[in-house]
Image 1 (spheres, rainbow, N blue to C red):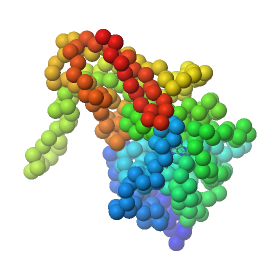
Image 2: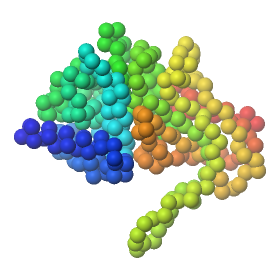
Image 3: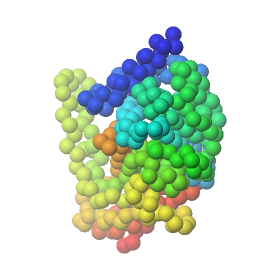
Image 4: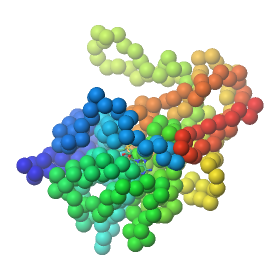
Length: 341
Ligand SMILES: C[S@@+](CC[C@H](N)C(=O)[O-])C[C@H]1O[C@@H](n2cnc3c(N)ncnc32)[C@H](O)[C@@H]1O
């Protein structure tokens, strides 16, 4: 029974890792992984329960509830993109002599990004340290991993706040993976976690490799093609009407290095100028772009993390204003801006 299940997990994983497939081709595999994990664990997504119950508001942002963390499994593009990206990062870090050490900050109740890869790499090739602030997540993740007979891939599982975790100097990770973010890097602690962990292991490969937020002006009515319900055949791609104003923030290893030593609760971010004259159909928006690792990317609308967002407050600009952004750290982290005139 165990080996049958392990074979099934390995076969879903190998399909997800198939380089010949696009993310859109992998929806059946992402659904199979979701059904498989949901069937095998006693962690149930209880529709009668408040899905936000059990979240923890940390000094670095919100650690989402175990139920919401479990629901990440239902993001059909995000999950394969992260599994593929982490696979590539581990492959790049493979070395003779010892396993690649992966530090997984915020593993959730399924250790979703790591567990499939335990079937693709041997314990001699890769081991994982799992962190989560919620004990329920760690317990469920470890029980699921053990149910496949893969517990020896886990070096350690620790119930800690990743923004406070001190990495033992003799166990510096080769890869750090964390998906503790919301769209536009708002509200959740991804930025603080990445900064804190990468400062202790500066040569580690980071997954995601980069999360950036750009500002643009969009005509929301052109973002999607609406087809009649009885339409048959191909759906034409949308002809979007956008003006890109520039990148305002990027979380990556280079910037984390630049921010080292910065005191206080602000990180520097970019400045953009609103076009003048401004067309009334064009509204200011923020676009989140994720390079999971290498060529593995999440683009607009691929998942909840990359949904284009109206600029907070939905301000009406006259045209020609300059906006100066910064990233505000703290219990409610987010990008904020002031209008310079
Ligand atoms: C968005 S879920 C992701 C779950 C899983 N890794 C996945 O990708 O499907 C984020 C997880 O990180 C945990 N988390 C958030 N902030 C944390 C922190 N500062 N330290 C440790 N765990 C944290 C939450 O408890 C939650 O389980």
